Image 1 (spheres, rainbow, N blue to C red):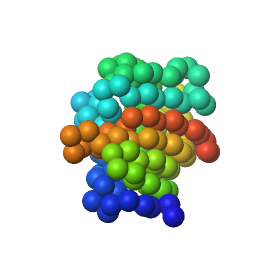
Image 2: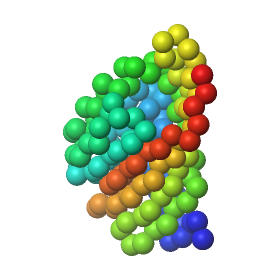
Image 3: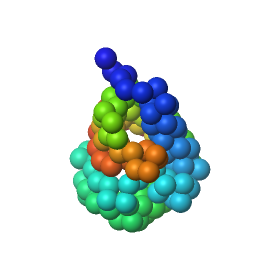
Image 4: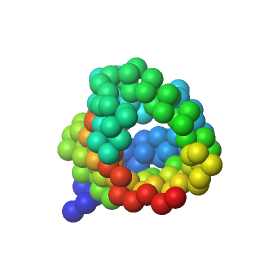
Length: 137
C-alpha cells in the first residue's frame, strides 16, 4: 500500500510538502527552512552544479543562491506515497515547476524520494533526493 500509518501523520506530512511548495513559489527562505530537520541531507544528482548538502543551514544557503537563477518559479507537488512507521516516514512526491531562465519558459517535472522524521510532534524532511523526470523548454 502506498499510504500507510496513522492518518494524522500522513496529513501532517502532506502539509509539510505543501508548506515546502508554497515557500518555493513565494521564494520564502525562512518558511522553506522550517521544513528541514537541523541535520538534514539534500541531494539532486541530476544537477551537479548543486552538490549534496548536509545540515539545514548549508541546504538553505545553497537553495537561496540557486533560487536567484529561477525567477517567477511556480512549484507544485503531490504525493505518490507516504509510509509512516512511528516517528519516521518514507515519502515519494512528484513535482511540477514553471519558471523563466535565460528568457525561456521552462517546465520541469521531477520526483522527490524522502525520509521524514517526527521531532517533538512536528514532521521535517530528514533526507531529500530529487531526480528530474522531464524537462520542457
